[in-house]
Amino acid sequence: MDTAVARSTHNPIMDLPEVGITPLKDLDATVTVVGSKSYTNRFLAIAGLASEPTILRHALHSQDTLLLAEALRAFGHVDVEADADNETFFVVPNGRPMRAPDTAIDMGNAGTPIRFLITMAALAEGRTVLTGNKRMCERPMGHLLEALDKLGVEAQSTAGNGSPPIEVSGGTLRGGSTRVDGTVSSQFTSSLLIGSVGTELGLELAVDGDPVSKPYVDMTIAAMATAGVPLWRSGYERYAVPGAARYRGGDITVESDASGMSYFLAAAAITGGRVTIPGISLDSAQGDVGLVTAFADMGCADLSDTTGITLTGGPLTGIDIDMSNMPDVAPTLAVVAAYARGTTHITGIGNLRVKECDRIDAVSTELRKMGVSVDTTEDTMTIHGGKEPQGAVIDTYDDHRIAMAFAIAGLRTPGVVIRDPACVTKSFPDFWDRFEALRGDR
Image 1: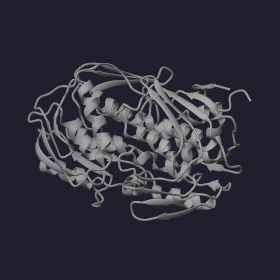
Image 2: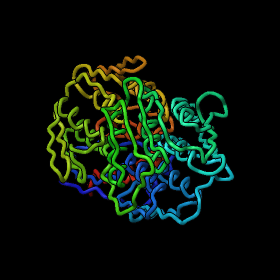
Image 3: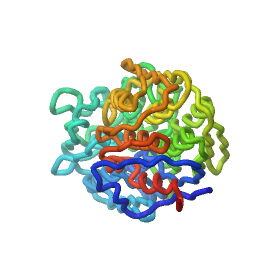
Image 4: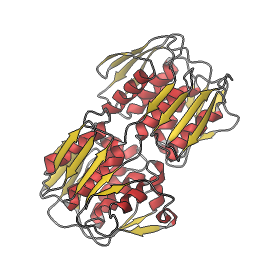
């Protein structure tokens, strides 16, 4: 049976402390996933600096994007309307100057938005304080602060550890030449590129080290070009943004979220079923579409064209894979690897240790609860398959990606229970609606 999966109203699962997952057979579904979180964040930040109104369609309304929208409002220079029912954001310049808010901007655990805002705050009059929850106040920002210092911007960690709270003295960003370390987060590069548009001198940026998560920089450059600001680049090492450039507004449609689709493709992979995701293709700049190829290498059949991606599960075999260009879907692949024959060795994922939680430790701990043998190093995971995983109560560490990846395991393994199911609101508020709809009317 082919089941179409769509949006619904508030799911009562979100009010529960934990939810048990019932296994599913004969999966055949079309799943419409939310708009890309990464693109929504980028287009919102760009719209906040544009000289014309912007409407974002098929935009993700999640904890992260709504926090960014509220932060833009707090600077006072744009009006932002969030219409969740129609999946749109309207961002309209109102003619007032961009000024630091009187109170600190609390970004919770929204890592990408707070990093974008650090550079943007240097454009606002006054002193902006950016903070977040306990985990956010452990996440590294030091390399971005050092790069801004070379541009004459006073931006400092008030705790002196390179992490939030961050205090930025605004009105000081004129542009110029700087360097940033690219080995911890691509978001530092993206923050500098997005925030430099409109400065008098533009930006000449050199990136040191072997940059992580390169496709996210490609997404930033694509988003900037969509908004009328192309830039010069030499690989992932050097970039130049012209001085006094301006973002234009306009009507922008956000493509479907490759990270969000990963969970439903994983459902097909481990159940032997079939899932189709419309609104995205393998040509997407989102690095996480690479998971489709990884699943094909493990034994799934994939079919892709300009209208969508279809994956059909099959007997799975472990693979060796470098996931440095798609670290956000490494937890998804690790869970699928538990159902594959042989060993899966995942490399290039050291930056998972500084995400919403230490995802390497979290994934390995929860897989071991399920009886799966896992070895880890600072930047690798090795999953030993061949033994059917067992049911377990899964701790989610206030991390949306842990909750969603392990929920998929419950579609094959009886006895999987997911704690704190509401943590998915960070990136995919409708996840449980779409997850339950996989079952159709049965």
